[in-house]
Length: 168
Image 1 (spheres, rainbow, N blue to C red):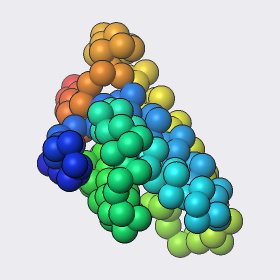
Image 2: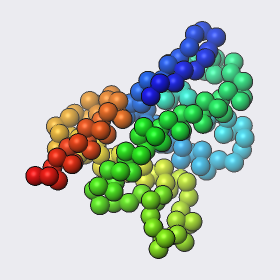
Image 3: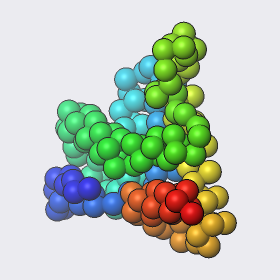
Image 4: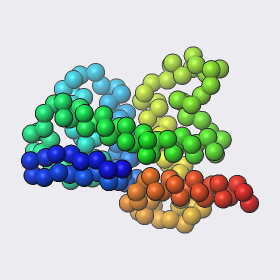
């Protein structure tokens, strides 16, 4: 992960997503999926930027950004998180015998259409909770350590641990 947000006070660098930030991101994405009002969406996009940058971007800095900059930054963040985090969560879900809504086969197509984006984000939260349980119970990490960790690195570690346990 390496993304820069240009602010008047200087560039802000996004180089990792903590587990805590991702948990907050999921909650905001659930709200975004329920929101149709453009002004509310813009506020939620700004909140996502603040959350992912671990509150290092001030409200005043976001207010000075052009609307297109906020939308573009939000889009880039969603793409970065999908590639660096969500793909790994989907992979782990498959490894552990579960499936994510987006990965289900044609027998579930009608069911998938009934699922909302909110349900999909909620499933990421549920999977994150299961992953944290693995980290705490099997790998003996503390909850605090998990929340402060770079989630992408933590997921790589969990994938390694699950693959290792399967080989035994």
